[in-house]
Image (cartoon, rainbow, N blue to C red; front, side, top):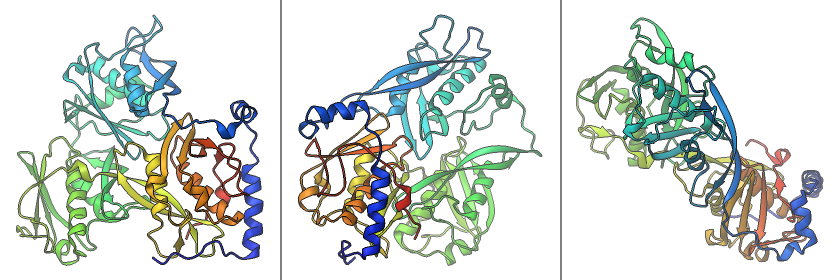
Length: 474
């Protein structure tokens, strides 16, 4: 893409941005920031990785496992930990108040925790199984604790790598916040009516914007009897509802049949599945992984075999071997991030969706590095200085609701200046990072030090809040 000079703007755009930047930056300083200024804040190095202290609400139960109770607790999140991991580790320690009880067995272990989009997956050891009622209460404690955290809406449970099955023998599915213990117990133990429809939160996987990852979308659906797999395919055919995601099943495709034999789902599609496919190895893999990862969310399905008009095919569209069963591929599961770039006249910011791995260790740093790469969509312009590289992002951390980004001096020396250019640079960073649910403001450092301005116009001496006035959809 040809990189235009986005600093040559019209006078009216410059005036508008000056007004907006003044309005957005006129935030009162916290006492901590005032102290920094009083002690020579420009020489203060605040970029070192330190434990982050947060206050979390932990859910426990009363002695009789009849009602939920809460404890507010300050927790240290170590640099190598995620927020979810730190909170769960604290929950497993048990309550501090003597009248409270935990339903989590003392010998139960937390094996693995991961997050994709707003879904947290929790894998526990077999010792977690302590009987129906206690086990249900333990899961509710975990689900309620996690869904108190920003960006978490659903929790999915595994035990020793196998998805939980409810007491009724049906998939447990995604758990959300539950206030009434008895309601959850009843929903898990009631017999299945093969003729009645019930609400179920289902994970569907669709293609991300670069066709590198499949990204989960949770959809509440009506499932009749045990037709989970059939319902999942029908929902995939409808396509995604979340912005930044794309369909994976070709137009006109119909589901002819689906059955599960010995852990393998045999899915038979109509001829349009092959005839209308756009082709390309990436496109084929998106289609396959979308369907396979969606169906293997159900514990009874371990692999998927494809048929077209009742017959096996060597390939789907000429690239990927297609006549053998496929198993789940966790490596292709991603998550969306939203990046903001300039429009062609450099007078506002436009969102661009991008997908990255779901287990990205430092998502804040990754967002800034993606901004440096520049936009992929036509009609958008870079906001970061030309010549800046990913290595110029020295560090990134989160402290409370503030993200701290430490750049090399190149951010200043390579910037061409100008109020309009500085405003777009700063707010492309701030608006992109504050799309994360736990971030409210961003502190930009240069070589570990607080700066008065970026290049003479845009103030950087305190954390900057989001400026929605600069955002406009393309």
